Image 1 (spheres, rainbow, N blue to C red):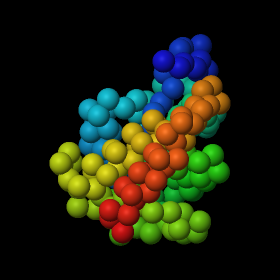
Image 2 (tube, one colour):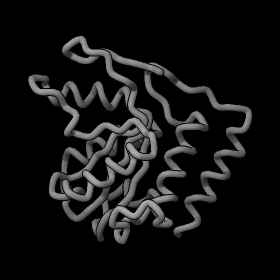
Image 3 (cartoon, rainbow, N blue to C red):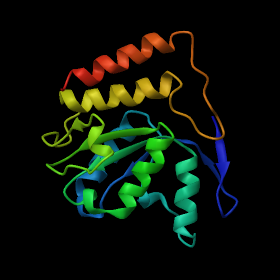
Length: 174
């Protein structure tokens, strides 16, 4: 397991996924985080920021040490500078995955990315779109396309096949 050292000298695990969202959606995001953790994923969200740290610097370090960034688009998050900043960080590093929980539509360039529709999810782990999101996260983590400065995963021999399978996942909900 890969680790990194935070501003207090504490050893932390590299995250599978960093959640970017608007505080206005806290209740649903709490459920999303719980469900992702139940899928045995290492999840970071802002509630994990320790007291007494420079949160801007800490968040940058956490983003650097997260394999993927799940941006949760909503009416509230599409107007958040923080969410756009985190989404852009993920986009330029090929770590972006996005979902939407209501009709909120992001501006360019994020409106050109396929987005998993969780607007009718409600926390149901058997929901088809929830399973698509979890499968996509697992696919990106397994095929080496999720990278951190600590552990740039090299693509496996099956990476091309896995990438094609990942594309099939996206087309299921177009």
